[in-house]
Length: 128
Length: 366
Image (cartoon, rainbow over all chains, first blue to last red; front, side, top):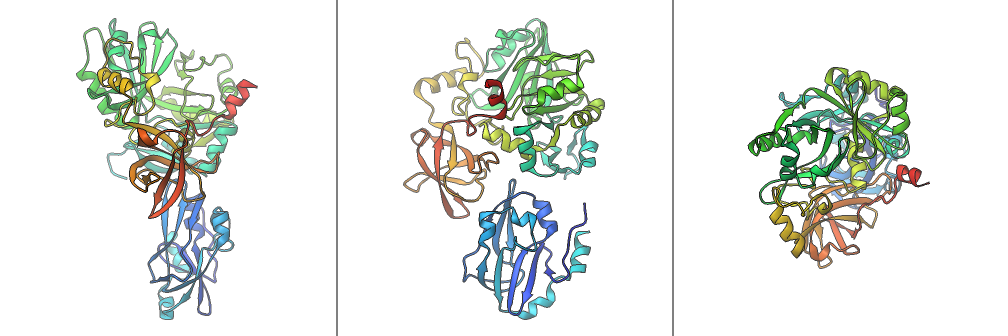
């Protein structure tokens, strides 16, 4: 397995989603490792804006040629924005998993959950 | 993977190439090496190499064997000349499909059946149960490695490895001077051949085909390629519950033959029209990939079937799928809906195959 890129400014969870925190807004996507495992993302199902989710809830679906995978929200909150670019070009999840391939943003409702997420080094250890 | 999973003689080569292995038909087989979409494109535009070592080889000999194959299988085997092959089916007493296979007349007095990996024990047991005097079976499935070379450049790839050999014509079979078996058949809709050699020589040949320009391709691309052509996959699109008439494979069933297993059921269905038809369906709006077992609804919103296979077609960029539809909604141009996790997407029945013209057919017709 080739080494996956893990940016230092993100937090992760075991199911391979990342969160980037900016105040009370968390941007969520899937890790480089996860996209490499899925390969060839051909469809992303986005959640409705305004949907309230709990941490661990299936919130979006990323589909590769062979399988559909639930994307679990790493934090509780309300979906405030989704990324229309990945609907039009699902391969952005493969080519820019930490950038243009983000999936949704939530306004977090339980900030203390952030401490329970994995640091980049802890996530790196998980996938090594 | 479970302990009793079977391993291809090419497995070390797959791992060397970084393949991802998955369980398939009781075997650990590569689903992809780098990308299903890239591997699919390689076969449509150039040439790909697939490990088909999991498939079974049963050699049949004996003075009665050709007449016996006429009774065991749906197509008329006895019309084949040495060096010819044909797609055919093995049915149960109810006319349901046990397996689909290619039967080749290897020489004047020896024939070869290439059968599906998951069905080897069942097929062989069925053949032994219905064996007649003057027929001998040799199940050599473990002894052979198999490699399918598929794509418009397949013939030039063959010439690089075998400069002194000639490819057999379409559906034909021949042996090289070294004893390897070459079948001009495949499961992708492209020109190509299926190559069988002793298991111990499999990796050497696989790597030689790759060195000659073939892209290693996994089961993922094999599935998207075959579904674009509406080639059925046994276990998905074929089952003991459905006949080849229902599957749209009537042209491979010679009802002129006086008797073969399942013939009466097929004859009645052909006369009265089958109640169900394996139908090609295109998803007409942008949406998630259709997948097997998703519900199919008619215009009135009633569930009429479930999908037997489905993918987003890499060549066409749309969802393509098949289902056994009631005859009333199987006519091309019938609007349907596919249910994906509670959301419904518009779909339309179409004529088979989804991909009307492949690179190879364009090339040969040019």
